[in-house]
Length: 260
Length: 331
Image (cartoon, chains in turn cyan, blue):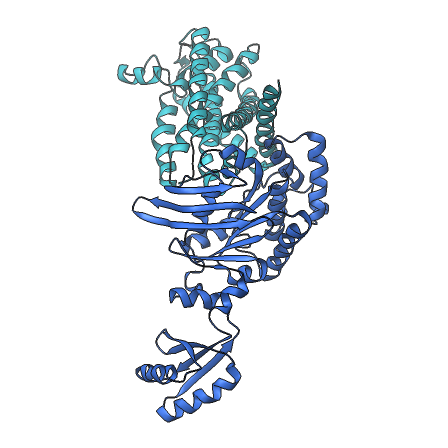
């Protein structure tokens, strides 16, 4: 019993820390909303008019804007959570990680609490973006919001933990650059956030199928617009699986971290 | 009774020997200083003692437990303040202490009491509900010390506790560390490359260079090793230094004559004020022009120079330290 309580307290305190940090850092809040907003406004509206030919609409008669918005929400969530995970690189040199390494508490639990906190932050950001998006396209379906919360949360936890796993192994700032270029960009472009998976060349399709973000984007699109490539249950199952795998991986890698 | 015990400790990074067969003990209740230039192996030793790095060979015991075999037992009994500020800048002072206490599994009531107690001790009561990013460097350091103490550790580890602080704030931080020892009977292990810090704050000092301890003892014992007073004589002509060295060496009451740099000679004597006129006599006889004479009671800086032939200051603030200091100020 004592053990369970300890685990809950450790998890909670790390969660509390991450969420509080987010609420306090207003510049981060503004930045996190501004970027997706620019995507929706400029990229979204630009392509919407480019793809509308004399009343003909691509994407199964769906407005490109409606198609794009779930993608942008998931993009915001993906970037926030992946970067939050990777940010433990900085912590290794200048912060919290060192503290945790000398604490007499399970590292796995502390890092799990932190990942939960970061994911909560990502969910909050995702919903701020959704609120803004709703103003642009009021025809979004809102009845599936609880499922959207679940989708966004699982996606966030997956990529926070992936970030933590990769960051634990990286020793330099150059590595940080490489990660953003070679992991973040392809993950985003191969997720179906900007263009549909079904019209991708087949080699690209295979990569998209292996990408957890694809399922997050597709589930969000299904919930918000009613149109999706995969059955919702499949997407959620894949996301749940990815979350479990990456959470355990992050905990395992972080448990063994030393300063060298 | 020794609370830290190190036997033949060695740490290699690839081919580089960071710590070379080091052995020493730290007694309960003392302030023990690890003095040396950057890259001497101070932080590496500290990292091993606080269980975040594994030694290549040798043994280290902290609070009676082997750091490799029982890291959790060690962690429960120590508090650590790292070189870089590791506070949460967005959180308030109180929140920082609270998070730390909870990570250390403290009960809420006990933790609240302890937080109030420590905030009083470090005199930050008025700042406690303000975000840490508004604190000065000295206040952050004090808060970090309080944080490291929250779980009542037996030993406090401080890595360069006053790096990047202005002289006044440094003295302030020293006062807290001294008060800690007096009021809380805690053992303090600190690393520093400031010789005045080692001299004024520490009960015992180990001087470390290139991963080896070159001298260990009370500051006054260490300085006594190299005589009563140290004299520096700077001559004009570098070609005449050798002659001057030789004549000084023959003077009998002059000990430990060394040439440092191109034109400076250093030696130690019993009474510098009486020796200096005699030195001028010698220089006149040799027709060597003296540009400058300085003397002072020996400091740990002189001890370091004596054993290594180099100055501690030559190494002061390397590139990484500038990055660090910049980073600390920016955060």
